[in-house]
Image (cartoon, rainbow, N blue to C red; front, top):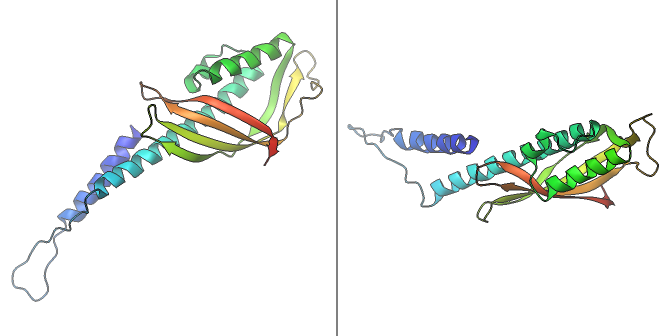
Length: 188
């Protein structure tokens, strides 16, 4: 929806520029000159608007994924419905299995996970369309603790590390995160 609005705005701007009359100097009659739009420029505006809309949708899905997984991990709920709003397989199953394993061991996640994502590439011509995201996750305040007494699980301390994710546009138009990796050996 947002992409269409941006595309319409770009078209309206081009139409407005083309419709403004220009008076010729020293002439008794007014002439109307319409600037010619170079071939392909209107497609470029559409392409740029589509790209920006895809970036925004992918970053929104990524932020939703982080929030949903934090909430589900905090409740030890591997089947939390918000996970499927932002995630698709194979990442959805991996996240659910991680939460389930922590729950089976009497553990849960607590605290704050800080994120600073950026889009590294957009492939709208691929089938399906994808957006690659890179993030510097700060997990220093995000801990795996025992649910019973909130003691930190030994060896579960977090730090700042690189993370990558792929957002994919599905046939229903939703952008979902279906692939992701934490590169804990790569500090940021």
